[in-house]
Image 1: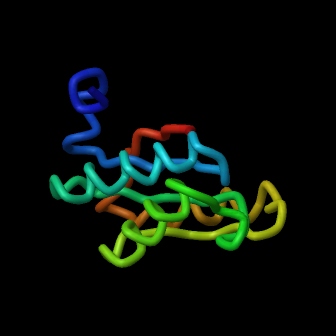
Image 2: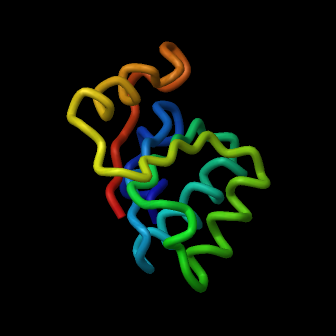
Length: 102
């Protein structure tokens, strides 16, 4: 559905912002599917890994084992830290990312 609704994700890639809840788990699944299709994907987790439970924890571990590009913010990040992560979007590879929040 993401690829149908946001066609530009196929070429531009995606940055997915996730928390520790079930919606975060959905974001991990989405990131895995995009990555498996060869689409440049970056995940920013705004929680500690040990806060993940159930399906969210399972899908996070699958995503990490797949070698996905993930960054963990275990504490509340500053606006500067988030801006820095966004600016380090692998320059040409993820330059015009589509940002998705789960």
